[in-house]
Figure 1: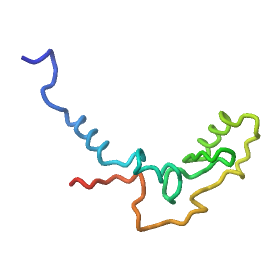
Figure 2: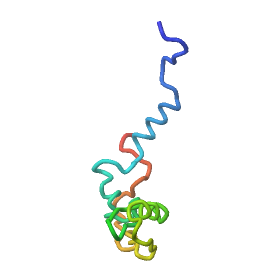
Figure 3: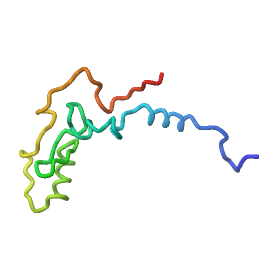
Length: 104
């Protein structure tokens, strides 16, 4: 016997969500370390805080970080380091966050 109104099988939406989670690079773990640290161009970590070296993907996020972590220091946008401008691109490596899978 089955429970009340319980589906016996997985729905198409649930299966699609599992496939998406398994095949999309979210930037976590050892595989995403270079992406998070901004060591390679193309990573999500584009800007670096000049005070504590924390990385952020955009200017707005960096401003939020600065306001919360460095409230006594005035925010100066020109002092923020753009990691994509300073690092050379390696076109032979795949870019992070790109949908793809080894399982086909």
